Each structure stands twice: as structure tokens, then as C-alpha cells.
Length: 96
Image (cartoon, rainbow, N blue to C red; front, side, top):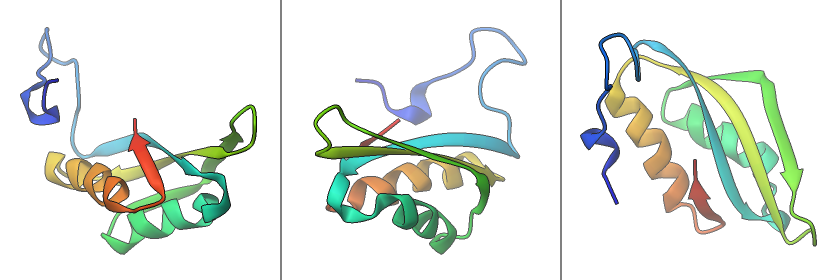
């Protein structure tokens, strides 16, 4: 699997542009109040969360929840940190 830092645009002007607005989805245990926690975790590392964009969806059987939120960040390092801190949470299984 490629590391995020190894991915580059195939053509100039494509790919990640910083600063910018980005979307992240965290998936984890439905009982963990991820709707509230995901934005809080991102704000805790200094990112500006766009609260009006927060959406969630339960899995078919209701055991898992995906939370998608948009945020603003200035650098690739901040973007990578967002994924890292969310993945470090014991109730979050993975991020997209």
C-alpha cells in the first residue's frame, strides 16, 4: 500500500492543493458517539471543522457508524495528522 506522502498528481494542477478544504470519513463503533467525537478530535489538533458538513450513516446492522466531515487545513502535514489522530482512537477502525 502506498503512503499518502508518496501519491503525486499525474498532471500539473491536479491532486491536493493547500491550503484548502478536505473531507474525511471515519468509521468505527456505533456506540462510541463518533458524530460528536470526530469533529472534536479534528478541532483538538487545530483544524477548522465545517460543522454544517457533518453527516453520518449507520451500517446495515447498526454496529458501525461512518462520520464524514469537511475541514480546512493549510499543509499536507495537517491533513496527514488528521488521519493519524483519528486512526489512533480505539473506537475508530479506519479513515478515508
